[in-house]
Length: 260
Image (cartoon, rainbow, N blue to C red; front, side, top):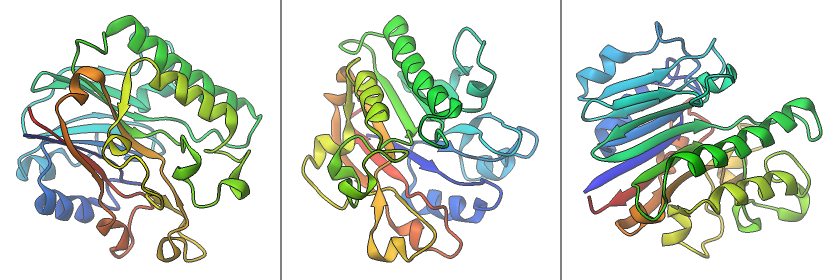
C-alpha cells in the first residue's frame, strides 16, 4: 500500500508541531507540502528526519515554497519547469520519484484579481503544466501524481455557493477551463473517483466569518494521478481534523491510497 497526501501547510515553521502531530497520526508514505514559506536554510529537515521522513524542498523567499516528504529518499528531484526560465516556478513546483511513482508537488498561483497580470500568469502556469506532462509522460503507461493547492475549484459541487462565487478568483470560468485542459492530459481526480457526487467536500475555508464551522469552503487541493496509477487507487479522503486544531492552516490535507 502507498499512502499519498498533500497539504498546504501555510508556513511550515508556524505549523511544524501540527505537521509532526499529523505525521504521527496518519503516517502517510509520501506528503506533498505547499506554501512552506521557508527558505531551504529554514526548512525543518532534521525534525522531519527524526520522524522517519526524508525531504526535498524548493524554498521561496518566505511566501511560496513546496516540498515532498517521503519515508524513503526522494530520487531524481526536479525544481521548477525543465527549461528553468520561470523563476517563480522554482518556488511552486517540485518533482521526485518515490517507489516508481513520479510525484509532483505544485502550488499554482492564486492569481490575485481577475484580469490582472498575475491572473494571466496563473493561466499560463496551468497551460505550462499541461505542456510539461504532454512532453514528458504517457498517462496510460507512466505512474504519475500531481498533488497540491491548485487554487481552482473545478466544478460547482466544489464550492459552497456557485452562484455567489461565479466569476470570482479560484472559480472563474477561465481558470476552470484551464484546469480542465490540464486534466484532459489523462489525469484522474482521486477524490472524485471515489466520491463522485459528494457535496460539501472542501479543503479550504476562510479564517474569518466562521467559515469552517459553517462549512463554507472550496475544494482547492487535489491529488490527480495518471490513468495508469488510477487503476491502483483504493480510497481517497479529505482529513478535516487538522483544520480544527488551534492556529491551523486554512487548508486541510487530502489523502489517497494505492495498491502499490
